[in-house]
Length: 266
Image (cartoon, rainbow, N blue to C red; front, top):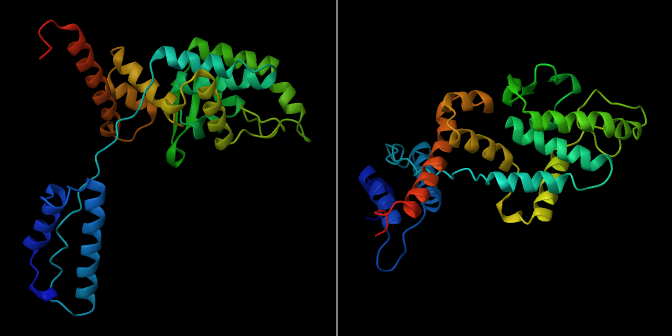
């Protein structure tokens, strides 16, 4: 085959299949690598059509493979506790703030950006709920557990006033979580707090910015929560997004079965 115009859709599809399957001389490519190659081929044929070199774009209907969806990584409850304890081990206002932050992240399933965006008035301690502003500004009301409430109360009474006093103009905008200069805690600083706590707890390799959110969802499902309730708590627009956590739970069930059932071992 010498001319671009001689290429058919089946040739492009066959090329993709060959990339994924590999042969004696070439190992199979991952979905991500194969997708990059197919995108390049599609771009070539689209350019050829626009430039009048070919009458049809034969690669248009050949879709790049979707990369395998990574399962969210949750950590066991005891690891969450270790993280929170490590965060609260710092002396002074910062330790109280860091503990409260991590308790809120795990106790509500909030994204880090949602947690640092909280104002003091967003937390209704009487009703034990918090108002979170999610993606696109969409708000949701989420229950707050007793551990998080106590940690926040402790922070508000014993730490936040000292942090606010460090600012030139006192409390700025009523932000719940303040930095050492009295301003709103940034997302980057919150992630640094989580990362530092992970290092102290010996959990560095297991922790990402969404670790506590993933753990919140997984532990709820492990405890029997309905996936649609978890969807509402996480602020997912579609239950399909939330259902990925059920795969993590199924994996855990398989592990327990394999290690516990007398006829499971092969």
